[in-house]
Length: 332
Image (tube, rainbow, N blue to C red; front, top):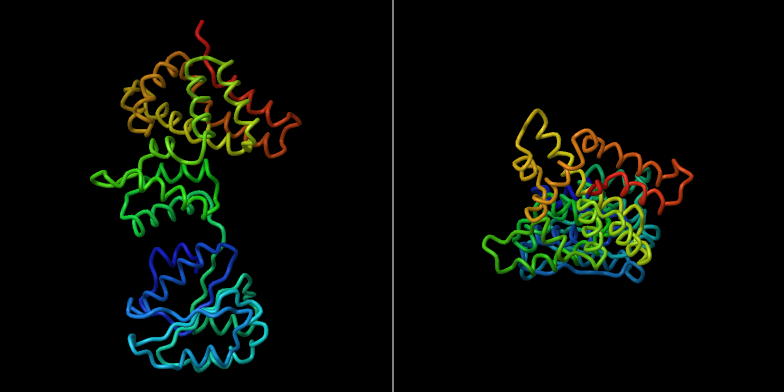
């Protein structure tokens, strides 16, 4: 089971042995905390042992000790890779006959599925995989954290924009989420929209990305290229720049689709989720550009993505510059 799935819907009964593995420590911490809360009911704290110094006998003694406050005992062995290697046989015996009311949590970086211990835990315990989340899964995770930790509604497109612009480092994403939730704390109801993300997340790179696209809509190719230059000189990765362009452009492309056959363009822009303050300018841009060119948006994005991935001999800067020129519709 992946950590995102576990956090979204934890199992009703917590088994006696749980292995939490992977390189995403933030996910692992959340899973451990959720398991301890479910097992102890908030009436006691788990016992935390350092896997580098702990021994199996001490861990098992803790598990078998009756708690004065809760009906269960939870022992968490952190950084337990060495602990597992040193005590594999003893752990196998414990999994076969665990202490009643005890929950042993092993936090490890690696957990080979072909070992007897891993197979035994998979059969009678629980294995939680804490690996990187990407794309829609990372966005869905943020939506869940906003709701559970901050009692705040994070819009789906706002979460997607965070991942697009900030990457998939969960530690960084949660830091930015905390800022956003504090920003909307006085709202009723508390909700974070994509506009809030554009205004607050990360640093000036987000502002430059949106200003670059505003210059494209205005037909100011020189201004757009100047904003691109600022981003590249600041060390912004070309893929992240393209991600920001794609986030905005896909909404515009959806509006173009919705307005096909004589549909109301202004209404289509609202339905597609284009930011309210950008709708008027975007409508003028699309009318100046023409439907035939606007319908090529997705193809241009795919072409640029392929070029950045090695499908072209052009430098990354040139790929992005060409895309901006293709997107712009200069005033005649």
